[in-house]
Image 1 (cartoon, rainbow, N blue to C red):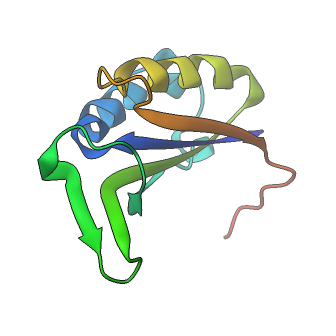
Image 2: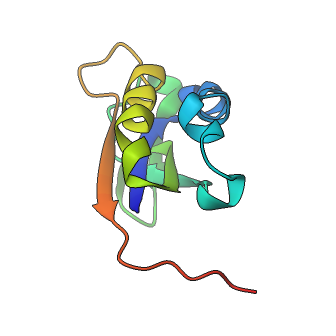
Amino acid sequence: MKEIKAYVHANRIGELMAALKSSNAWGAAAVDEHNLTVYVVQGTLLPIDDRERHFSVELGDEVVNEYKLELVCDDGQVDGLVQLIRTVARTGQATAGWVYVTDVREAHRIQ
């Protein structure tokens, strides 16, 4: 089992969520195996335009409101999901975000 974490620009998250949920990898397993979570975070991605630039008083620096997506999936679904994220989250910039894949050692259902 793997966890995919992706950091993407806000203007890409809606289309990315729709693409993930309509992908073959998403449909290949039961919905409760995917554990998709999305957070609004302040990060340091290069802003696409001035509307994305914000100054954080707490952090004392310029930040961009971006989205962090976390998705748990079977090992065999990782390549397809990562490629889909990398394709749909593109903005035209050299670096439009990041995708990380880590091992999940254990998972326990709360009943």
